[in-house]
Every structure is written in C-alpha cells, then in structure tokens.
Length: 309
Image (cartoon, rainbow, N blue to C red; front, top):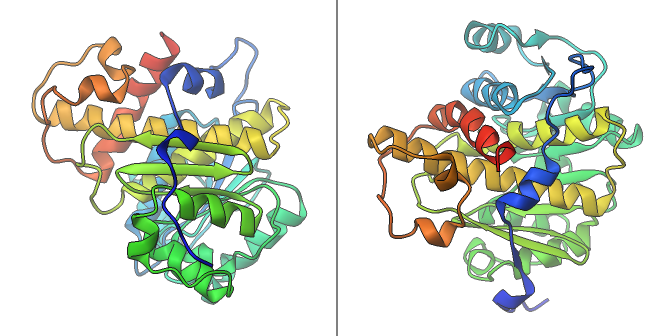
C-alpha cells in the first residue's frame, strides 16, 4: 500500500471548547466510583518510572480511583509517590496497559487486554501492549509514535511503512491504521493525529519541550482517566465518542506541557492563555525545559482553566 501525505484540510483542529464538553466535572452527589476507576497495568522492573508517571497523571486529571497492577517492587514505588493509588485488581472502567512494559507478550498482565475487550471495557494500549493488538478490537485506543506504529503494522502484515514515512505523512498513516485495525489511533508527535472512521483531528503542541522521556506515560494516564469518567457516568463510549475523548486527552496533555514550560521559565500564565488557540501562543515566550512529572503536575491547572472557560 502506497502512503501518500494527507491534506491538512481533512483534519479538524481541537479547541478548548471541545475539550470542555468531554471533561466530567464532579457533581455534588458523586463518590469516587462515580468519578471513574482506572486500572493501570503499566511499568516494569526494567522501567518502573512509567508506572509512577501514569499514576501521577491519572490522579491529577481527576480520577475517582486509580488501581495499579504490577510487580510489588514497582507498586511500592508508585505508592511512595502516590499513596492514594490502590494496589491490586478490582472493578474498573478503563484499562491502561503497556507503558513501561518492554513486550506485553512476556508479561503476566498481557491477558488483561483481551479480558477487557471481551468484557466491553475500553482499553488504552501503549508501548509494550501494542504487541498484543490485532484488528477488530472494539473499544481500543492505541497511542504509538511513528516507529511503534511502523512495527505494529509490519507485524500484522498490514503495511510496510517506515517510521520516517509515517512521520512525514501528515496523519495519513494514522487514518489508514485506524481503518485497518478498526480502533482509535493516536499518533504522537509535535502534531498529534487522532483518527477513527470519519473522525480526523489534530492537536498541535505550542512548543517542543514535550519531546522528553516519560511524557507518553503521562498521556496514557490522562486518556484512561477521561474515558473512565465517561463510562462511570453511563455515557455510551462508542467509536466516535472514544475518538473525541482521545483528542481531548491529547489537547490536555499538550497544553499541560506548554504550561509546565512556562512555569519552569518563571513566566506568569492566566487561564485565558491556557485555553487560547495554539497559534496564538506561537509568538509568546518559548518556555523552559520540562520533565514528564512537571507535565503531570500542571494538569490540574489546565483542567481548571478549561472548566472555567
């Protein structure tokens, strides 16, 4: 299959108003279960930090409860940073799996993905869990970067595209992969592309400080939280809703990265700046270097600014 560049007019730009419609603000009658339970099967003894970062992000995006399932030594690290997390299995509304796992086929937690699909529970598959993905998995969101998407499509004999071709396709690879796999695809990059059926959206990050280790783990936690909050409210999370929620998570993540970069540079930021169109921020301060944990730390401020819009 020949991969031709996608035309920019085919992709809608995600704005704060759309993100506002996705976020589930807590109601007076809500309890922790009403606000959504996320199960994180992330991190490993090789990459324990991914578990910490995904848990930080899920908690700071507003999850009612975060469950963690993984090696005891990794769980201890998660609880040392986020004592609110519950270690062990239980009822959940969305599964996040793969961040920080080298290959989920070699991990006991790999069975969780198919179990969730069979149980019609939405799944966010990242990094090592992409090795478990097959076409036709309903309720699935995958969050690869270009190299990971190339590996996935080659493994399934669906396309023989290089990472460079995918990165240069302006979203065409994401749209094609969504069609071939029958799931929502979030292709990470400075321009992030989200595709599912006829839905095609792009999120442009105001600067490139997000290109640092661990930020993808944060994104997975954000996405799992937004999806879980909808499921717990009884909202029907069909393919279109899942794609819109995925786009909202990408926007929150990108804007949290921008906000963290401004904070690290000592630049004061107003709520209006936080939810301004990204093109309006291009000529502003560049900001300073950030860590993935800075992005998680900035999430409550972004959510608050969007809710106040």
